[in-house]
Amino acid sequence: MRLLTHNMLSSNIKGVANGFPLLIEVEKVIEKQVDFNPDFLKNIFPKIEWKALVEASRSMGYAELPEESPESWMLDSDDFLRKFHHALLELHLEEGALVCPETGRKFPVNKGIPNMLLHEDEV
Amino acid sequence: MANRPELIAPPEIFYDDTEARKYTSSSRIIDIQAKLSERALELLALPGDGVPRLLLDIGCGSGLSGETLSENGHQWIGLDISQSMLNIALEREVEGDLLLGDMGQGLGLRPGVVDGAISISAVQWLCNADKASHEPRLRLKAFFGSLYRCLARGARAVFQIYPESVAQRELILGAAMRAGFAGGVVVDYPHSSKSRKEFLVLTCGPPSISSEAPKGKVGDMESCSDDESSGDEENRTVCISDRHRPRKKQKITKKGKGREWVLKKKEQMRRKGCAVPPDTKYTARKRKARF
Image (tube, rainbow over all chains, first blue to last red; front, side, top):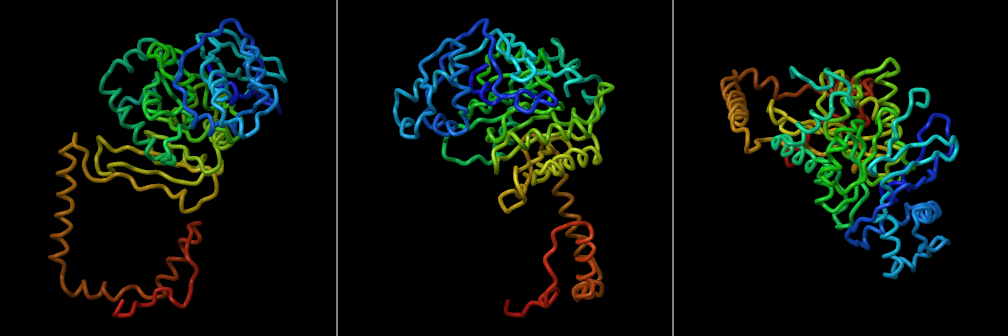
């Protein structure tokens, strides 16, 4: 699972008011090369929760992203876009778990697939 | 259809390891899935500026439909309930991210982030209650409600469905409309029993010109020549009956039904809740000859 998906996912358990962002418990991270596409990055940037992305990439062992939410002019800098691209699309959480920030419920991640199935009492 | 898979077992059980492999090793199914997802992508009507979008593939299975999305350069997130199908998707090294989840429990995604959603032959599974806790209406409501939330404003969702009956189609469409979607059903090749395909095209937001459902494809697909001929025959019979209609009867119908009749019909449609233009002095008035 890439951080792009992590940035969109929130906990879906009944009664949870703020299920975002899910904390990441890392067991294994892998990197896969993805084609660099500045257009996509510029398009997706407004939808990204920057703080969540920075924290998630830190927990995956990548600390190159700036802490502060970047200004719009930074999107024209190739250096910044490369880092953003790497954090968003190339880091994969292979094994580990996602933890709901409110209830502490763990969603296990096996072979890169998070198991988001809820128990019957959580629907 | 005699053997609908959703009548045999719940999806997570029906698509076990053997069934998942069978599904993905059949070149016929691969071909059909690719065609369906291409058509679904076409119906999504994404802006043609070449920028890749973030799409959702609901019931992605082994990633056959996702592959079409990747080929068109888009990033996608796939959701499926069957672990076996997702394992095959891993084997095929699909480019999108996969989630194991149940669409009837709602999609756990942040609001307004997804640029479009497609789903190939999946939504009809929601109409079945496979567990004691399952209530199709509630599951459809949860699914469409959460989908509406996570789609960006004006984004579209296209579902290819195989409804079992008219009632089932109405159940699905009704749930979508209640969630706030505008749109409707697009039927490709409506006169062909084999290549007839139904797509539910939904737009996030209130009804407008842009949310009107596009036209379905009519006519022939190269692969089904027998359907084509049957369509022609129908046309011809209509012509013949028209020619042999007695003159007198034609004259009567030509006169038209009159203003009173039109007003009555409009009132009927209004009571049904359809959008009807207001009555004015022009209603049912005859056009001038020079028009």
